[in-house]
Image (cartoon, rainbow, N blue to C red; front, side, top):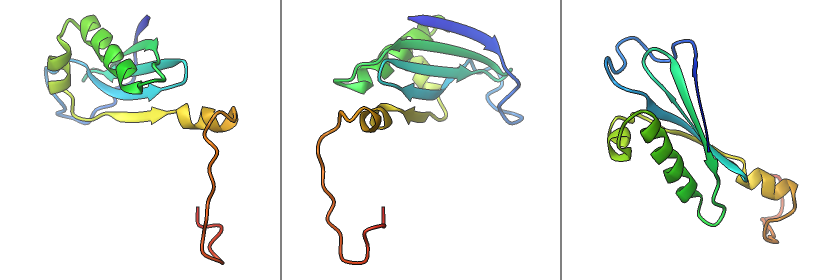
Length: 117
């Protein structure tokens, strides 16, 4: 597990959470690692990286939240209470397509609608 804290330009609007600690802002679940980023009201970002858990991606997210909370000196539940929003992204489906590891699927459409997707 890796941790990195670095200064970033302020990313919050005026009046956001005066006195509030960092809160998780972004979660990226990848095939190998799950990354979480929290930005405080001064614009300082804290990043955590934990191994992804392909059998259940939520486990990796919860592990990352635990590490992020510990780093910020908080309990995970307290960190989540302070959370206003979470932006989630994942490359799991993209990787499955690129690596041809997904299930075989088919698509049936009505005539004339083959390019709907």
